[in-house]
Image (cartoon, rainbow, N blue to C red):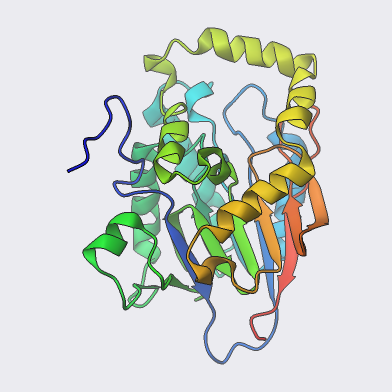
Length: 304
């Protein structure tokens, strides 16, 4: 039996990352669906410029049938609201305001590295529970103890496109010819455990972490726009797209077969339909100071 390394988080999910699913329309749906992808708001942090971008988010939701919250909506480790419990309540209140305003839309929440905390995932599950119905989630028929533990079944878990459905707790989503993912999956390379370890860096909360100095230093870097230079070096557009595509092709075939578009966040670098290796890539940027931000809005055909 292999020994688990010490001080390594088994997973932020209770099973090996990533958790992947497919969003499936009803058989009689023939019209294209409108998809909004919103990520990297970093709400509650001092860097967030949400008020400036809220109108654009509203327009994107108004124009869409499906809203994918693409991760890092909230920044719990550097929250200015206080302890983790208070920040989590505020996060759920924020999500519920949008859901109650648009009750017929489908909402999907993808985990990001700044909001993949276990306690927040529990809060998300409780928030989504009253809106769940039988048949909203269909497990793959080839499930076995091995595939359930790995989360990498050769057949996808299928999520319903029913109006009003809420799906939470996922790391990657296939919708027709489009893959949606936060983007931090590539930080783990080909090793799923490395992703859990990467996300663990942001699992602390303000009242239990000595991160205030680091937060202040990062704020100073944002003010000086040094984070833009760092992002341009670490997340060069073409190399980032290729890394994501490489990651996708290491996953079960259903996730990447006949893929035409990848929509992601995480890198804080705006990308609008850049074509790399035959795939179109989209990234909305981030709602932080000095960074361009636009929700991604796409039309997705649900039929071949």
